[in-house]
Image (cartoon, rainbow, N blue to C red):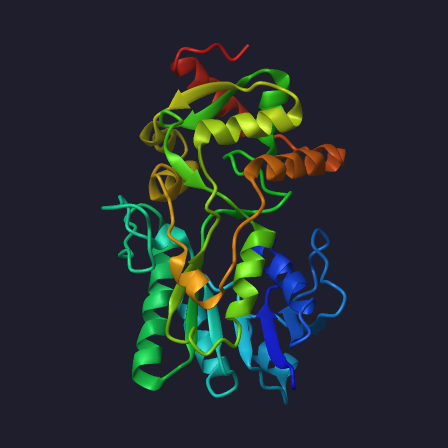
Length: 333
């Protein structure tokens, strides 16, 4: 049996690195990865064939893939309709399937019902990142309907690995936990959130490649492990050997103080997100996310504590968190 030829555009990010590792472990896939070769954090797995090129430069991509056709092309790094359009022009007639990595933050905000399914409307008036992904999806759906361009859309939701702290603020927040300083959690800490380990995502994702019932369809891939934001903070604290001093601050107050931080809250994290993964399981029978966040939290703590160079505090954000904590009645110490 001939192998499916799969091209990953990216391959060294949180999601794409796990998918590359999963794909090279499959006997039926031949994996190519197109990137600029600049990541030292997540090197390509043995068995992946690297193609050097800059996806933002169409000529560079054409040179890198010259003479090759692919059964599947997956773009992990397209964020705007212009970039998606460039992909359509590059891979029309050269790929049996084109997979676009979108985002579950594209789903309706605020939600009208839970759980979220793939038919939940797409609308996000708060976050430009999500609106840009929606525009990409609109373009690809139109191309599929009008020209038969073989697009598949996949929507991750807060997929993480050891390098991502999940809580806003990165290492700055974890450093505050260790120092006994107040830690900001948006809202009242009780909204429900779904975080997905990148290895769980990859095991659900790779079987979609080349699957005859995925073209023209959209899928989200998320864990079924649902936590409150306070539980997430406490799990990270436990992994660090501390009990975090949680301070609840309304999301709109945070957005007023820091619009960039606030966009991701109002456009995503401030809303409870619980997902129905039935559609994925209809084409990947038996798939199940198996990494609980408590285990993931230990991986995060171990990664940051394993190298002092990773433990960089954002002084501006640290001061802002002190002020927010003080404004809401907790001394920063």
